[in-house]
Image (cartoon, rainbow, N blue to C red; front, top):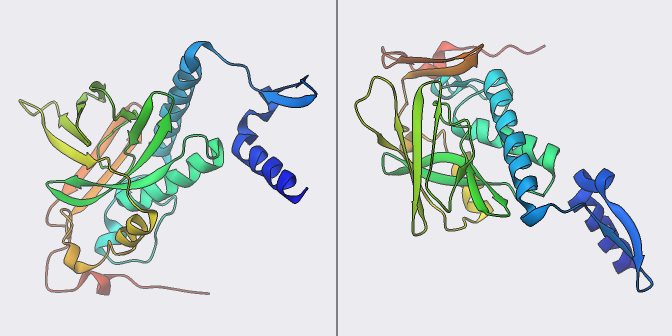
Length: 251
């Protein structure tokens, strides 16, 4: 009996988002719960991708990318006040889990920028395969990127294209002022232990990591119909340590 209750509870947790659409009927003396099925599940995947794109757009409009907390070593992490890739990826992952439950199997994943594994993204699973969601970048990756086939899209005049090669996914980007596509990120799609990813994220403020934007101001957001980018390489210059330039006040 306990196992039955445990299985029933697990079923409701896994499928809570579909409970309103499910149908109950009996078959061969058993109670069967089912959801409406579309041909090949394609409509469901398409609807999920559309919903994800809306979530990404809403996230960009409310949670900016910036290096303020990182460069001033302020202990504000994983919040709606924004931050760098890991802060935003962790926050968006929580939003996905809250809205879609375990349906997408979302998980954090580390990938490479400029050959170094310093970037945090999210992988999800749909019927067709895995998709990469990059809300942590300071560029508008507004669509989930399929990990199993070539793809391309443009957002705010910035073009992205991606192609899988074996277990690697390579993404390139071209801004309007650039003559050609340039490497953006690459991901080894081999599953990563959660503990490994969590440890890498927790260690991101370690000075030894020497992040590419350390000591530089980066700020990106979407407002209205525009994507704004602020880049200042002289942001944290001078003799003073960045951590000495802010104060903490408590009630």
